[in-house]
Length: 275
Image (cartoon, rainbow, N blue to C red; front, top):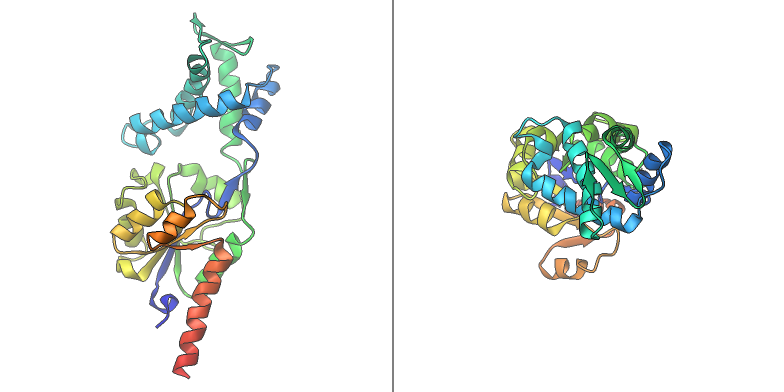
């Protein structure tokens, strides 16, 4: 019996699996700064400042502030403001006087910061910073045509469900059936409970009737397997970790075309054996 014939649901990760970021973080911060007449932040410093601020914000208020009942926009406002502050802290040029932030030779007072922030928040709540892998929509539709349910499992906030994925042509009821987004359910990967929620939303199916596809051993493969689901890892960007993934026993494929081919080959081979 093929793997496909045993499945009732396939769940997929989003970033790195279905979509990817376009350009660099600094590109979008630069556009926001220029829109209010300011020069661009340094790209490297911006990236490091944001990475540090996001990591700490996610620890202090996980799932985009779900437990603290923090609004999505307030969570991101704090994260972005802290990103600018950390640029100065990390590189030894931090100054704060009367709520004025000085960075790279120009100032962010509260009013100016709010203008910059709103542009950044709006941009990342749209399809602008993302691109869809060409095999994503065809694969999801193929799975649904096979009679399986498709679930999205992602450490993402509500705008991915309501705005970003639909704007990218990945719509509920045509490409996917249900979504488990950490900012909505209050549980995030690698917590195995997020996969248990997915199984419930798929109709309380047995774990071995579900396959999860993602690009992270820690966040996708291990927790999905820990609840009894099948799992496949994608290596779209030829990461140096892929070989160790394979050595640990994981199925690692380059894209969703290869996943479909694997499932189809098993289905075809099974049909030939029965004939």
